[in-house]
Length: 117
Image (tube, rainbow, N blue to C red):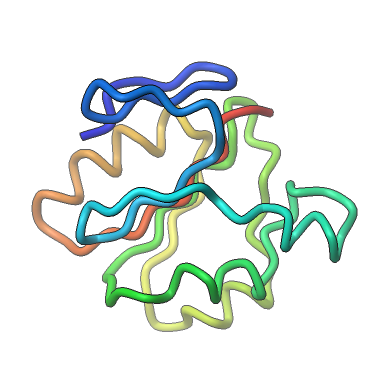
């Protein structure tokens, strides 16, 4: 599903995206609503629970957060509480996409991918 990522770009099924994205277990792709976190914390590198709530539309087994090419994004503890009982994996985006591609074959995976720092 995810073909590649490099700083500022992620390619999914041959389509290029130049912004952070969310991929739902159904395969639906949408732009990450990082402005919700940025408005509250002054940076989109703090993944706020109000933002995470926006993505909890579909049931999932595991949340994979691609923390950026350099790993700058952090899921805040309060956001982790929202998905207590679910598996959460935070990895730099290049590593996270590999795991996402593997796990989505056998589990319902919700992926949030930061594609810059």
